[in-house]
Amino acid sequence: NETPSSLIMIFGATGDLAKRKLFPSLYHLYQKGRLGNNFAVIGTARRPWTHEELKENVKDSVLTSIGNCENIDEFVSHFYYQAHDVTNTESYIELKQLANQLDEQYSLNGNRIFYLAMAPEFFGTIAEHLQTDGLNDTSGFKRLVIEKPFGHDLESAKALNTQIRKAFNEEEIYRIDHYLGKAMVQNIEVIRFANALFEPLWNNRYISNIQITSSEILGVEERARYYEKSGALRDMVQNHMLQMVALLAMEPPIKLSTDEIRSEKVRVFRALRPIEGEHVKEYFVRGQYGAGQIDGQDVPAYRDELNVDPASNTETFVAGKLMIDNFRWAGVPFYIRTGKRMETKSTKIVIQFKDIPMNLYYNTEQQQQLAPNLLVIHIQPEEGITLHLNAKKSGQHMETTPVKLNFSNTSTHGINTPEAYEKLLDDCLRGDATNFAHWDEVALSWNFVDKISEVWESKEQTEFPNYASGTMGPKEADELLENDGYFWWPVS
Ligand code: BG6
Image (cartoon, rainbow, N blue to C red; front, top):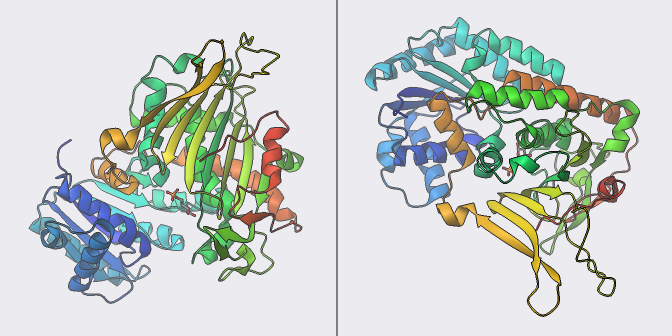
């Protein structure tokens, strides 16, 4: 856990991600002493900013997101700016000169992190230039952090991977999935493997189904140019939702090393039943939001949003049933659903246990049904777990009542659990790639998703919009579970 020394080069330093996430996260790490003093940040983008302009922007972003900050001037003194043209060799040579100079000035031992936080069409080009123009040629470590989307489908992801692998080894590539940096997503593994209570029950003998919901209130915002070509399947399912499925379903790794954990996740993806052709409509539901009300305010339909085709067939909602065909999970559906303009902003996992073999407390007069045991993992905005049990109601009769055991991560560990990006940057600085997606995971999840998008894209006709803003999605998403005798447990 030594404090690393490194140069951090951010491509896309004038962009939204840098401003909202990267600068505040770096500042937090600095304040906690996780960054030390031997670091320098070079921000690059097309705009002709000066060092001072970048520093002002960093300061502003930190102040906006955190409020009053100590040592902010010392922190921003580590930042430098270089205007950059991603396709031009000259530009990289200038960057290299600045990098070498800072390397010496801050004793960085030649360590370099290249963070690509910009338009994905340039990911491959930048990686290649880093190699051919010698920025990669360094005595220390070199790491490439790459934002999503990693390709648009399997084919384009492969092409991108081939391009970046010319410059970086797999171990040097950190593919961001920011859900893997969330405290409670990281906790899935601990809840499962650090407790004697759950693991023996964590299989098809005791679990009836698992439900993962990630709902958002926001609509497409200003991102229609990207989202129109992506849709919820590529934007959320291929990465975040499938990653959560893998963590819930994987076998215990033999140890907590990056390779072991990732290879167990890969085995889950290999066991995912492919859903294709005619079966897609049995297993998957898509939706697009219509106009509606959110918090008493009228909001427009997706087709009326800025830069959206008025006849758009892009899905803003997906629900699906996933089957993992292995010994542990045969017969247990994993239901997922995610969408924009839904009722709440919430990510939650519900593990529903099977009913007990015989209900002793079933009384014909009272018609008392026992509620199933549920384990709820609250990913956000609350962080914690709730276990739903049945207990005896106080009084004379043997009546049962549902009780909830609650653990709140935030109130136990303080309200400031680090933001996902802070954890991921910290991991990258320390060379821990566990919470980043390996190429095999990316390839297998594209392979799964592509079969569904192929079917959806081949059918011109959609009955969109099919859910009103402010609701939990189209009725077909409820029917998906009803057909199996289940229902979505309420998320709020
Ligand atoms: C991103 C998607 O990866 O995740 C966005 O591109 C989505 O469309 C976001 O809004 C959701 O992340 P979070 O952390 O707010 O749940």
